Amino acid sequence: MSADTTSTPRAAGRPTRTQDHGQWALGSREPLNPNERFKQEDDGLNVRARIEEVYAREGFASIAPQDLRGRMRWWGLYTQRKPGIDGGRTAVLEPHELDDEYFMLRVRLDGGRLTVAQTRAVAEVSRRFARSTADITDRQNIQLHWVRIEDVPEIWRALEGAGLSTTEACGDTPRVVLGSPVAGVAADEIIDGTPAIDAITERYVGDPAFSNLPRKFKTAISGNPHLDVVHEINDVSFVGVVHPEHGPGFDVWVGGGLSTSAHVAQRLGAWVPLAEVPEVWAGVIGIFRDYGYRRLRNRARLKYLVADWGAQRFRDVLETEYLHRPLLDGPAPAPAEGRRDHLGVHRQKDGRFYVGVSPTVGRISGEVLDRVADLVEAAGSDRVRLTVEQKLLVLDVAADRVDALVAGLAGLGLHADPSEFRRGTIACTGIEYCKLAIVETKARAARTVAALEAALPTFEHPLTINVNGCPNSCARIQTADIGLKGQIVTDDEGRQVEGFQVHLGGTLGGQASFGRKLRGHKVVGDELPAYVERLARAFEAGREADETFA
Ligand code: SF4
Image 1 (cartoon, rainbow, N blue to C red):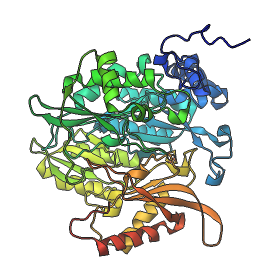
Image 2 (tube, rainbow, N blue to C red):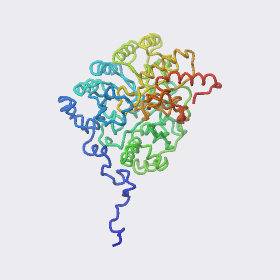
Image 3 (cartoon, rainbow, N blue to C red):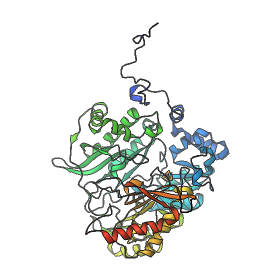
Image 4 (spheres, helix red, strand yellow):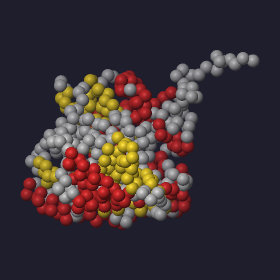
């Protein structure tokens, strides 16, 4: 009997088995992997009730596995790595073998914004419930560690009472919205994106319409000409530009991302006025939800869909299926000039000043946060900002209070005029707490900064050093002058030890290009300071005027 290929026609547009990437818009609603299954069975947002009513009362052992390693992320909770497991065993152990009974809790700070009262609230939670940990991330969040499940409801009450949130700080959700830390105050600002950040978070964070995405969804909005929110590597970015007829608004970028497969975001060539940013944002995330690939986790980011479709098709679908209107064409942003980290003392457009200071690799503490809050209040300000460079700003300082604030912050180790090494180095969480890590990062990066300051006290060229504990690139390996990817390497005596693959020459800011992995450039962890010193000396000796490291 010959096969009848016409007797069971597929529904129009329905994917064949080999085409089926799990795209909802093409009719693929059957979960194709365990993550899709648990998300379909119960929305991650629903885990909060179980945490409040069951897990916090009955303890860690009562937590259902799919909540522990899945849905708790929807509320900013990840289990920490069990101490004492070296990086060589990360890939060979089962996930539950790496789980500690303590959690990392991520506090989302959309736009990187904190008031004095909020700074104190985080400080108090840190001191009471998180062994005084507090890390500023390169996505403007604060991460706390050593959190017990029993304390989580009380922590939420303290944070939410201050107007802070952990909702969708992790998980397959709309993550924190990056914003210019000097939005509304920078003298050279093109447009203030703050109203759009507020509208997006108020309308859509915690909205079940967007709580089951293929994977995480990262947003950046900035109208600052220094391009200060790494817009090239977000899923969607709105970048301030001036339209020749319509004035200030935003240029739309989609499909950027790093991890193990780096993609620079693509411009849609569309100009969007401030009031329409939330609607366009909802359209872009809607495309991701409906058309994003859900079969394979490592193909489930928006960047893969954008790479396959191209910018023009993406814009067509956005306009026809989601906005039901065309967008206006618009200009590209000008390349950024100068530095984007906002360190130092700068005059605001209202005549007051903002002060940017540098913690070392983003690491502070509950006590330091408390002291920062006191100093900010004494300076007459109520606004603290965090940056994508793991730095901290204080806005709205009167001229006659700047010196006292700068001196006070310096007393906490937060310098407005740090060395280039302290200024340019960021580090991810690493093996201290992260279950995916292969190597230690924060302490090693801090030691490297101190050693370089001692060895090269007069070095004065911008140099970015991004230290990552594994290939996932949370601290942006590919975008740094010196990008370090944690892995196990072989030392001179043939031993397997912690080290890094080196990427050189990455840059962002309008002329984005990713650093290149150089064959043979692997460095043993303990030799990192000496390696960077050699590179820095060679650069200083051989550079021509105005030549950057990249
Ligand atoms: Fe963890 Fe790797 Fe991300 Fe660092 S880069 S925080 S080690 S997943």
